[in-house]
Length: 341
Image 1 (tube, rainbow, N blue to C red):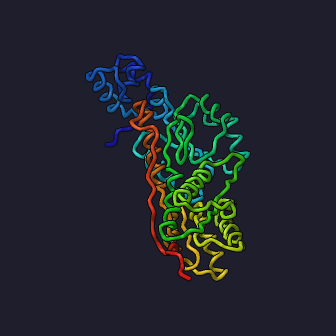
Image 2: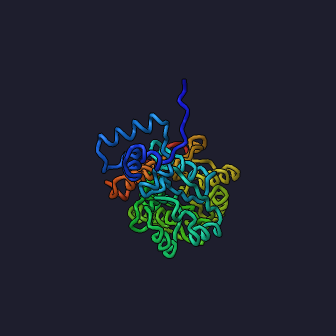
Image 3: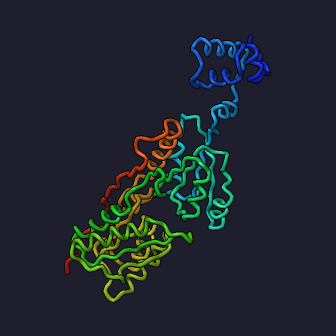
C-alpha cells in the first residue's frame, strides 16, 4: 500500500523530533552543526512521514537562492548558443538553477544594468561575451554576488576566455608561412556603443606577425565592417577594388570569411590560387566551406565558466579564477601558397 503524503511543514517536523527548526533544516540539507545521531533520527522521521524539503526553503536556510543568472546578447546565434550549452552542461548535476536574460538591443542592455532585475534573486551572474562600461561594472559590484565573464574579461572578476591576440597571430602566420607578403584583414565592429575587445586584440595579433616578418602594415589593407557574413561581403568587395588587391586575407571570424568567399566566387577569383582566406572560430559550417581557420573552444568556455561558478559558490576561492583556453589552427582548402607568375 502506498504511503499517503502528510501535509507538514518544518515546524511540525521540529516539534515531533523535539529539536529546533534550525536543526531540522541543517539535518535535511546536509549542513554541518548536527550530530550524526540527530541527523539520522530526523531523516528517519521525515521519511516515515513522507516529508519532502522544499528546495526554496532549503536554499533560504542556507542563505542562498540556488540560482545563477546568465546574461547574453543573443540566444539564437551559434556562438552564444554554444556558450549557453556549455554553461548549462557545467552546472548540470549541481543544485543550481539558471535564469536567462537576453539583452539583444542596446536599450535592453542599458535597462538590465540600470534595474538589475537579477538582484536578490541569484547567487552568481555569468556574462557571455558582453561589453561592460565602468559604470555598469560598479553597479554589478553593488549586487554583492559572484560575477564571471565567459568569452572575455571584466577587471579582476573571474573569467574564461581565449587569447584573441594569439588567434589573430595564428591566422596571419599561416599566410606568412605560405609566402604571402600582401596580406589584408577584414576586421569587425559590433552592434553596441561600447567597443568589443576582440577586434582590437585580433588586429594586434595580425599587425605583430607582419611586423615580425618585416612586412608592411598597410592601412588600406585593413577594413572594418559589421560582424557577420554581410560584413565579409562588403569588406572583400572593397579589397578587390584596390589597384593591387591582397593575395591573402585574414577574416575576423568565420562568418566574415563566409561572406568574403561569396564575393570571391561571384567575382570569379580562384581560392586559394589567387587569394587565400583564413577565418577564426571553426564555425560548424567551416568544414563545409573547406575554410582554413583558427578553432576557438566556444562550448568549452561555457563549460568551464559554469564549473567555475559552482566551485566559487561551494569553496570560495577557486583554484584558477582566470582561465585562458588554447586556440588551434585548422588547415583546410582556402589557404595555400602564393600563385607563381
